[in-house]
Amino acid sequence: MFKGLCLKLAALLLTIQASADNLYRYKNDVGGTVVDWQVPAEFAGRVYEALSWQGEALKVVALKL
Image: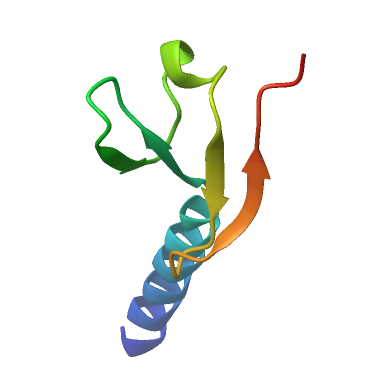
């Protein structure tokens, strides 16, 4: 039983870390900073940052003209 619990916990931690790689930070229409799992389409053409699970900016994505 303990081994099964450990396997489930390990799978949960791997899932959390995999999804945490997809945080983004962007400015909304009123200038507030938003951190979310996705960038809405209306903000995708603006500058936004891809974040690590620790909140560090990994990549800055800017509008390319």
